[in-house]
Image (tube, rainbow, N blue to C red; front, side, top):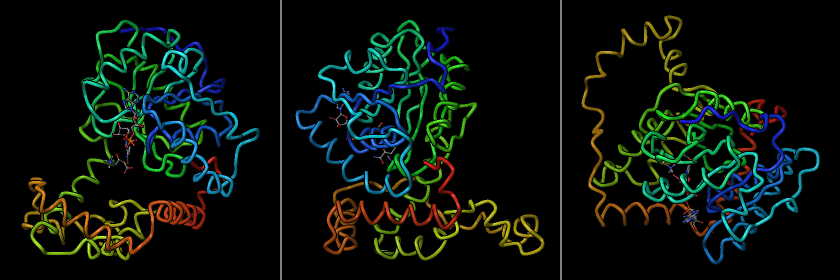
Length: 322
Ligand SMILES: NC(=O)C1=CN([C@@H]2O[C@H](COP(=O)(O)OP(=O)(O)OC[C@H]3O[C@@H](n4cnc5c(N)ncnc54)[C@H](O)[C@@H]3O)[C@@H](O)[C@H]2O)C=CC1
Ligand SMILES: C[N+](C)(C)CC(=O)CC(=O)[O-]
């Protein structure tokens, strides 16, 4: 473990390195460019640069719509030929490589060695605790999880948490940096599988898969049940406060006294269903039907506009909102 402080204060960060430039790494690139940073990306895939530039081009109209920071430009993106060159001058590194534990462990060790001492390195992992990804490399107290939501250039939340070897100062540095970079930060003081939001999302997801597997609901029924129902409330009021209103003037106390006993009803089947070929195909087929001829690019544009409309309608544009 290291006690090396970052060589750069969060407010003085100029250059961000994004390692792995797929859906999430590319989304981070778009976000940091829009917030006015110099961004250096690296990804080992042959077609990575072309795909990355395509993703940034597709995201840019949405980012212009919500407002670019002074000096923000797509021209401030450099795609480096090697990982070492990508991170050599970075003030902060966001790792978004595939979700494979061995790969994350060796990549994070490599990043620790290739960055300047003390530079904070955050992993986008959607579920691995940093304690499992930490290597034995020296100076690894600056490795943190910075879990984003898709697309990182529009969804504000980042969950920040360290592992058992992470310096508290690195967690605080990352939280402050993300805040300055326009994110909405939850800083966790302990590791949970799936952090907070994915733990919740995965519970919903498992139930949805059970219903498809058993022919109890279609993919469309499941999506409509959220977008026409609780999803409308969740955009601005979380599940706890929403349910407190279900208790009327008696609030959560009445809600719990009234509905609490039904917690024991067999509403959920939280053990995950077998993700066999039939279930996989049923879900894929249902999503194709739901897309109804819209391409991936159409859906991305539709989603981005929807998120912007919700952020605007709920008064969250204007603050450095994403
Ligand atoms: N897709 C999602 O909705 C979300 C994903 N995440 C996390 O973000 C990370 C990346 O996931 P996605 O972007 O979805 O995956 P992806 O498959 O879209 O992108 C992964 C990228 O990493 C590159 N790559 C492969 N080996 C690499 C290496 N050794 N070093 C650096 N890059 C390498 C690939 O060429 C690819 O471009 C994962 O840890 C995932 O859990 C987090 C939040 C949401
Ligand atoms: C599908 N996923 C588990 C990788 C999703 C996330 O981690 C967060 C999100 O964008 O919902």
